[in-house]
Length: 181
Image (cartoon, rainbow, N blue to C red; front, top):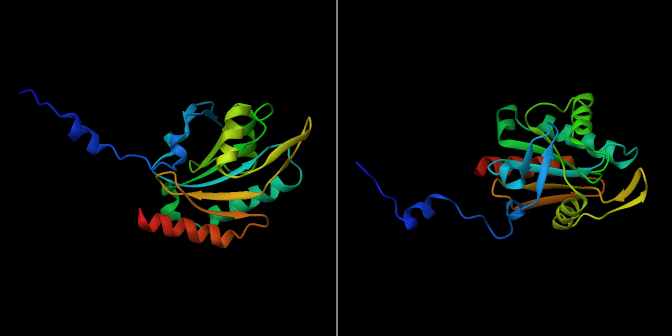
């Protein structure tokens, strides 16, 4: 028996993305395993996002430590509903191989950890969406904002912590989103 689904029925099955969703960005990224993906491939999980670079000696190690603290404060039963995403602002240095080594050496190689790198243009576009500013100040150093952003499973910005980053506020946002979804 042949069954036909009208376009109207088919459309209703696919949830429309909100206009302010980061999943509307069409940039292509590579993760720490060398897999190509778009941000929409992260849809369905609560995202905790930070932009760093692996050769940073000052702010980034603190941001990485805060991301690890955030992970430790998320209920273990909820970790499969959360992705902790670290996006490189130095795509020239931070290749997928480099990100993979960084993830392993920092004990951030569990499935909830996602490291992303892209080209300069896509990296800048994503930074602009986060209202994050960065600038290369030498061949190996960047000046950049310290921001941790939390996104809903639909890709909408729910909260941001900037500067000294209140980890407990980030965790509270994550728990609230996870409870709702």
